[in-house]
Length: 211
Image 1 (tube, one colour):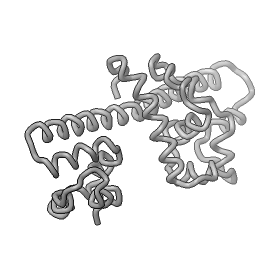
Image 2 (cartoon, helix red, strand yellow):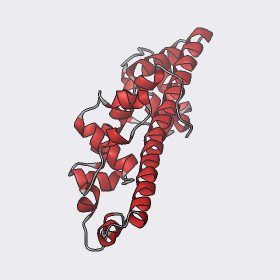
Image 3 (cartoon, helix red, strand yellow):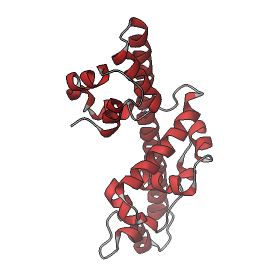
Image 4 (cartoon, one colour):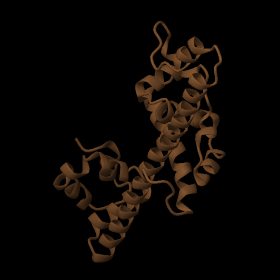
């Protein structure tokens, strides 16, 4: 079934002619695609679609296509941001493990039990919340990408917390929601807002590390 904001177009949100309703009926399969629905969440994009449906022309089609191509580029950059955060966090953890392994086995200190327990991935009897929070290194300290690091300064503490849970700790949206005591939709919204802010910072430069 066609998404609600597209149904709204049939009640003359942007288009006073019946052409929009006909267009929606003919293109309902395409318009139900999640990517297209996401594109049409933006009011300006809906306006472009309404203009093309009601007054078809090469100019209207080109304007709609340009907006969609820009949207796709934005989506790709958001994916790059999320992958870069994960990549940076993984690299930091690898360095920490190498450092820990070197000192645990070669410095002669009597702290083997503590080190083993501190670096065991799954600890019997500990809750998810305990495992997430104990000996936590803040995300900002794990990021070496200059633009990404600077971008983090524009995020709220809550946004950074969500990014850390999803990309550093590897929690699912459901697990992060349970940890934060909010809905999964809330986690997804905070994540999108944070990634969009970081995207703006990375758009000013060329891509950094490969992912």
